[in-house]
Length: 405
Ligand SMILES: [Zn+2]
Image (cartoon, rainbow, N blue to C red; front, side, top):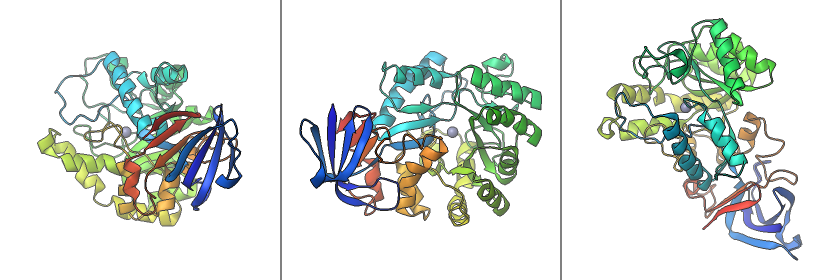
């Protein structure tokens, strides 16, 4: 059925402009026209009146973990089963959709739960965003996402695929694709929420990284690297990585290299901020809080340099990390503004630029005739108050309305 969405203000994300009194015509799951409201033919159409609201493309979270809840109090030695993780994913993905995220890129879970959840959403069994999946991450022994499971488990039973040679990295990348993930995720440096590693230090050699990335790149698949430290970023960029996640301890050479290679950066500011804000009192281990504080200290300065050098900065939240709950990751908008990024640039990061990041800009990311009908609305103009993005009041995905408060 034809729907006509009346938009008080419309940000198509095709450019920096905000248009007033526009209409978006939707037929089935597609946008068929974008035109002044006065010219819209509403005969026989369902009219959705958002004439008091600010409408924009459906949001894209370029980095989240659907099976993680954001709990700050972990029970030592307890590792959720895949069944428990999958059920967490069902609940979390619905929260993400209701917060305005019509597409998400899952950056790794422990047993390909994201692949199963993606299939369930496509089949219409559960409500959730369109998904891009990573399955299990690749890491080195004792690296990020290999610090919490006992050593006596079989290799395949660990949280990540552990590889310590180019051959092992190549095999792990092939396994990720074998079990249906869309891209590979590599742990290129130590991290905040792992134990005993160093965020500034690289964990994969160039040869290991290249072996895994050759598998992805030869298949035309995406890849992303968890990397804080500058050396790990440089290894990944030189080896052919598609996007750098976090990047909180980068240096000028890493920024120049990313600009030269047009490597996307997902800053995930809210993840580090939430760990520091909640702190040890919330149950997070002191080592993790200390590392988060250290990582985020110069992040804003580096982001300004990235903006000036032309590194494409995308929107990703790491939702599911401690205190960074699904459905509340829209706080990232305010932090990106606090970092000094312009409002139009931030809104494009979460829409048109993220659509390029996930290589879906032919069908999502802007309000354009011919694209999928993914729309969200907020009650205020984010150019006046960016925090209105924390209260998305209308969500349409694929032409279906999931929320209209
Ligand atoms: Zn992550």
